[in-house]
Image 1 (tube, rainbow, N blue to C red):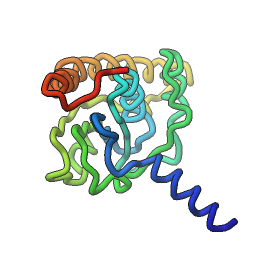
Image 2: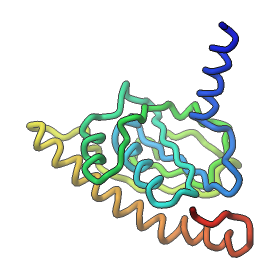
Image 3: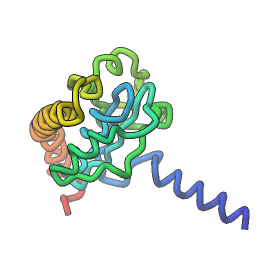
Image 4: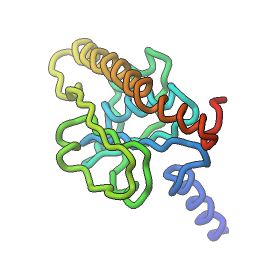
Length: 179
């Protein structure tokens, strides 16, 4: 019975952070410091844009949990990130990614060098909504503003760069059609 439990845990871990992408998937890693708000919201939006995207997020110094205001703000636009957990960037070292996107200045400065493992690295910075002061309503308003900015700018990057790359690969016959 103990062996089965260990096997089950290993299978769950391998599903949570796969070593390589499914054939035809475009792998994206979104990095920030705490992996509790900006990168989690970015991951949620990118996943919603295209089923061919295999998107993960991580932090250089992950928080203990995803910020509840981020969860609420995303729920308001129909994206559920309540099951997400903050992950340390070390979980992804040595893996290959098509894109690594940093969303905070600190992660852009300190993120590990994925040399040879990343096709494209880009910084799309956002202010940290977790630094908002005031009442819960005022804090949530800041999270909504940052959420809307993340949605807009990630959508632009997806449309102008990622989708065009997918279309070019599809024309060359190396990527699956969207489902």
